[in-house]
Length: 326
Image (cartoon, rainbow, N blue to C red; front, side):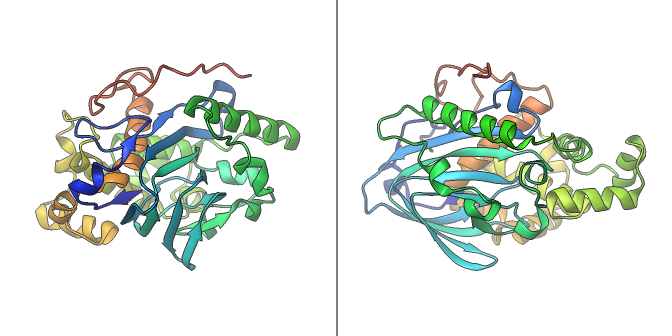
C-alpha cells in the first residue's frame, strides 16, 4: 500500500503497530506459527488512528497473494476489473504486475496474511493467474465473510487479532485436509530475493526441471512469467531502499540495472513514476507493505533474525508473539 500525503497529513496518523525512524506507520508483521509455515509467508496487522475525514491517495502493491480484513476504513482501489470499494470486509488480493491506485478515508486498521507461492491453489483450488491485479471478496473461494471479518472485536489487541486469524486458518486447513503447496515456486521466490538477475535456465538446471516446466509452474503460482517475477523483485527491492526500509549495506540493489536509463524505465513501468518522483512523493503506506516484504526477504536469506529490531524501525514494534500452535 502506498500514499503520497503531505507531511502535515502524516502527522495526523497515529501509529499503534510501529513506525519508521521518521514516523511513517508500519505493521506488526512476523512469520506465522510453525504449523502454518507451509502455506503462509507472513502474518500482519497495521493500525494507525486518524480523524474520520482523513483522506489519502496512493498505491497498492503486492508481490504475493494476500487475505486482508479491513475494519472501519473506506478503501477505493483501481483494479483490473475496475474501481472497487471496500469497508468492513475480508478480501483476497492477487499479485500485481504493476502498482494500482488506492484511495482511503479514515485511519488504518487492517490485518491478514501473505500467502506463499502456490498456497492459493493448495488452500482453495485456484491459481494465481486469474487474480493478477485483481481483488475479490473472500466469498470468491467459498468462505463466508463473517467467518474472518467477525474475528475482530473492538478493543482487542493487535496480537490477539493475529492469533484469532491463525486459529481460523488452522481450523480451515484441518477441516479441508489442505496439502502444502509444491516447493519449486518457493525456491524460485527465494532465488528472486537473493539475485533477481540470475539466469532462469540455470535455476531450472539446478532444480532438475526443464525451462518449459518452470515456465508453466511459475505462471500458475505467480500469474507471471519467471522473467517478470525477477524484474518485479528487482524493482521492489529498489523501491524499498528508496523508502528507507531496506538493508543499507546492500549497495548491489542499485547495480542490478544496466544503467540509469534502464533503472528509470523499469521503475516507471511498475510504479508509473520515476525513482526521483517516487522519493519526492514519499509513499507512506507503500512503505508499510514494502517493509513486510523486506523483513521476510532478509529472514529468508538468513540476514535478519525474526525477533531482531529491524534497522529501519524507530523502536521494537511489540513484544514477540508466541510461535507455538494453539
